[in-house]
Length: 114
Length: 114
Image (cartoon, rainbow over all chains, first blue to last red; front, side):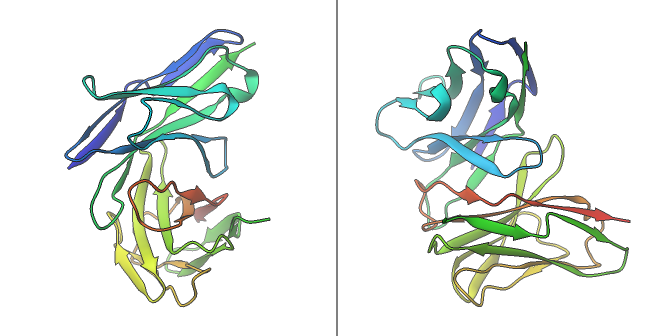
């Protein structure tokens, strides 16, 4: 069984300040973990993914995430928020097995204040 | 340009009608997926297909049907048996259903039942 919990449904930051979006997971296997971003009424776009290589993963648009097995966390960070970062972010866990069982978190809406 | 297209972008349905949502990809991906997105619930898997002429039910398949006659196409029919079909529907594809493979998403179809 696997699950993913996004600890905040809404996060609000000022432009130019750091962003932290929190994600905890559980998985019976060695998981792959992903962060996706969704702008209003759009599809999801991959930001970054962890697949058991380096624990610090760098993605697009200055985002990065660190896989911490001991804490079962995969938090998404960015040093300085930009207005264009305002969107909804989804943490996703993928387990092993014949079919890629993918579980989505419920999403975190990021608001960036000018 | 390679990618996934969904049509229509907006769809209105009267109660009791079946409607079909289109999903086409030119990425040469084997696996395709349909998700339903409701506010605050993340994405839930309706159906997936790992190969042409084969598909499996996801977590919320009741009231939906699919076909996979061609590699590039995976249409979803929302039948009158679906009690609450108003939602945002997202189609995705991946190179295979392997655990490390990210999914690529289309722009979505917003279905409203009148």
